[in-house]
Image 1: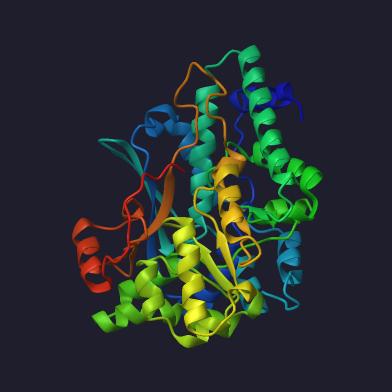
Image 2 (image 1 turned 180 degrees about the vertical axis):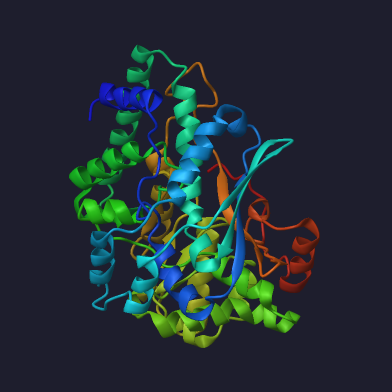
Amino acid sequence: MRPNDFVEQLRMSTAEFRPPVQSPMDTDFYKFTMGQLIHKHFPDMEVTFRIIIRDKDIPVWSVIDEEELHNSLDFAQGLRFQKTDLYYLRGIDLYDKYMFGEDYLGFLKSFQLPSYQLNKTEGGFSIDFTGPWANASVWETIGLAIVSELYYRALMRKIPKHELEIVYARAMSRIYTKLETLRSRGRIRFTDFGQRRRHSFLWQEWVLGLCKEMMGEQFTGTSNTWMAFHHNLDAIGTNAHELPMVLTALANSEDEMRSAQYRVLELWQEMYGQGLRIFLPDTYGSAQFFENAPKWLLDWRGQRQDSGDPIVEGCRYQNWLRKNHTDPSKRVTIFSDGLDVGSMIRIDSFFGDDHPHPFGWGTLLTNDFTNCHTDNVNFRPFSMACKVISANGRPCVKLSNNIKKATGPKEEIERYTRIFGNEERVSTDVMV
């Protein structure tokens, strides 16, 4: 695509309704891997997810048109899986084992996103998604992608056509330069994790095409299931914070709360083989996770690092492995926290060949338009999330290694901090 092709698509979205998300497959792959576990073990669980704008300096709700937001969410709620979608999911065998059973595929055959609640607040809007867990969970990345694209559409509609072409030319040049830099670091491997906060569906598709063309084996796939299906890429994803958050919320004692993060992983390894055995240790702080971690986790393929200093957290895992007589060069850390070229090079330089370290590159792969339009300081990526906030009426909490990424009611965060501790948690601004 050329810059003027993107501009023309934007103009067409102004003239007629063009939903940002047009397939339930246009979501992160871990929604399906987690969804199968949730459907099997927690079919009657009701949860609520909420979109959270972390960046208070971005005028998201005052920019987005309310009617367009309603129409886009309504359209998503009406989406259904096509036969070809289910054929694709049925055939996925990335790790020499078919991932999805017929019971779950049957569930997807009649799948529907549950209702949403869009309410006006003092800060603009709040968006909640409530329903059975296996259904409501799928709203997470779909809802975020809708909000993100509508925000940038609204900004760009006020920019003259010739300036928009310059904006896209600058963004194209920037991503090409980033990939050129990474291509000189042959050890670096990365997967696209950029669906939820992308600039737009079309931009993500273009960026992935460029990655596929330029990067060869360095580009290992995408978390976006639709993109994987339609562009012959590996669909990548395991699990997220919502699993321990819900199970911990349901616990009836402090001991049960502390053990819930490991109970999730027991259920996970019962369902999936070695390939998907990647744990996420930071829901309530990685220090306490490793201090109490069961020894059977030594056999898992590795961890995903999603908060805290990446070097510190990678070393924490290495030290735990060495302490338990396990070779760190045989295990991986997937780094996925707000990455860009500079941070990936820093991590790669530190760990070298001693500890495999593939990357999940998100927002700054699929939405780096900072300063591409010099007259608008809001034309940049911003931090937002969609988190589970309640399960069967009980509040859900995430502490994180980064205090500023914590979610939940203030009093519950304080209670969870007393239970899980505050050891080695840091406070760092969340940029994306």
